[in-house]
Structures are given as C-alpha cells and as structure tokens.
Image (cartoon, rainbow, N blue to C red; front, side, top):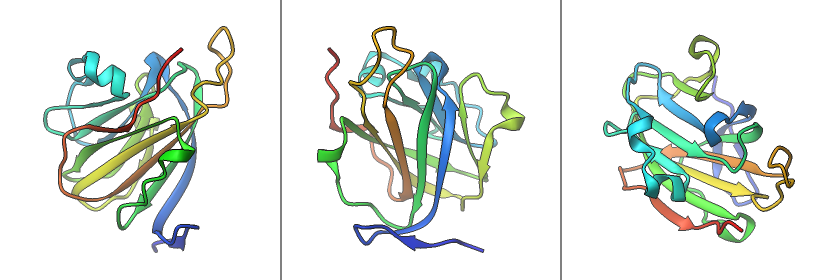
Length: 170
C-alpha cells in the first residue's frame, strides 16, 4: 500500500520518513542495494564543496553534512519535482541516482550495511535534491547544531550534479 499526502505546496508526496543518521566523515549516502560503487573516488574537491558526490554508475550518491555526528534527515519520495524553495535553505544541490533493482538503502558511511534503512523504490532514474538548513548554527566544537537535511527523490532524467544554492562557510 502506498501512502500519499499533499504538502503545503501541492506536491504529491508518496512517502515521508524522519531519520537520524550518523554522518561520520561528514556524509551519509543513498544507494541501490546491489550497488558496488566507490564514493571515495567521487569525493573530489568539487564534490566536497557542493556537498554531493556521485559514483560513475550513478547507483550511489553521497550527501555532505556540516557535522560528523548524528544529524536529522527528512526523506521524501515524490512523484514529481518539488518547487524550488531556496529561501528556506542554506544549501541546495541536485544529482542523479539510478536504482537498478532496489531497494534504496540510506545509511551513514560507517553503518553496518545489513542494518541500514531500506525503502522500496521502483527501479529507475531519480533526481535527488539535498537541501540543508541551519548549517551556520554549529557550536564552537562542531558537535552540536540545528542543522537539518531534507532529501527529496523523484523520477527524472539524469543530470550532472548541480548546485542551486551554495552555502558559504565562515
């Protein structure tokens, strides 16, 4: 059974999930369960700056964070592209994720893979939008903050990683 709801902007959301992920190495990832891509190769200087890395096969996508602690993540599965809501976020970036078989796995990079969150998702090509808010609220030691990450996925044609709004550190 698919759960559907309509958000305030009128976009139909198939599913929404609230997660708390351990963003060790300042990242978490989404991937097709059968993917074997290596994000360590994908995290070049440009990817670090845009806070998004994609493997060559586009079946693993790494999403950057400003803390390497547990971070709150809202995961939304949409049937169509959401409106650009740049004013309410510090950083917004998009990339492509290909699900060949599924399910979608969402995890911190040091999580035990068999225990990672899994979500049924039809095989296909998806746009992934990472929108970060509260990125400038970190404590002096970088351990506490009001940062939050909204991850939205919807069916779409592949794109190169694109920054819609760049967070400026410091």
